[in-house]
Structures are given as C-alpha cells and as structure tokens.
Length: 167
Picture (cartoon, rainbow, N blue to C red):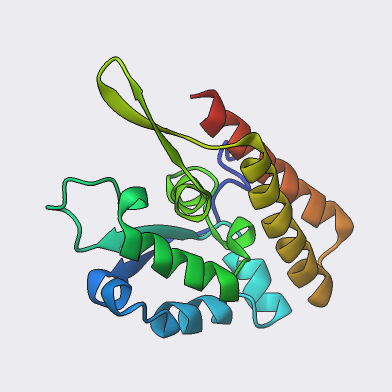
C-alpha cells in the first residue's frame, strides 16, 4: 500500500521551535545554525525533504495572530533572508509554509461583517513562490538533485499553496 502522504512529509517530522526570547532579540543564529545543517550536504538535503514543522513558542496568551506581531514578522523576515530553502525542508501538510507566507508578504487588514481578515496581492504570492522556488532549485542543483526530483517537490509545494488559497 502506497503512503498517501508520500512527499508531503519526510520519513520523520521534526518540530523546530522558535522561542519568544529569540524573536524579541531577533536572534536568528540558533535557528539558522540548525536549519543550515539540513542543506549542507547532499545526504542532509535528501534526509531533510519535508521534515520540518515550525512552532513559535511563547505567544500563547497574546490575542494577536502571529503574522500581525511586528517582532515575529521581523524575526522571520531576517531568518528568511539567510535561509530561503523552506519549500524543501518544511512539511507540505501542516501550517508551516502558510505561516511563513503570512509572515513574509505584506498583508492588508480587511473588515468583513465585523471581523478582521487579511488580504495579500497576487503579485506578492507570485514573488514569494518564485523566490523560494529559485532558492530551492539552487540548493538542489548544488547538491546534485535530479531535475525530476526537483520538479516533483515543486509540484508538491504548488499543490500545497493551491489548497491553502482555495480554503
């Protein structure tokens, strides 16, 4: 029987916890050091495909959504500037890629029926996808991933975002 989650998640999932103290100090070094190990060699890259689930710790009692908290956004923007390989390492089944998207693009608050929602420009989505797909392709090429494997992962990422946007 084929695994229905094949490619969506790696053989094991690792929860990468980002602590509030690091966010407040905008200290990306602990996370960056751990993430860079996932892409430092061909074997590390192969083993890290779809294995990371991101968790932000320390904001449980904050009523704001994470993507509206300026220091959280600044932290992830700084981390993304140094580590744009999310599409390779993050699972394609949980909240991680959606959360990153919400942290990294400009969101405009929109009020509908008394509730505040957030809207983004389609150009921002396109730029977000293109930049991270190019980064993923470059790390794949660096470590000799086949074009077929890169295309398969790209398709999984695109399917993920199509399903997220449809909901």
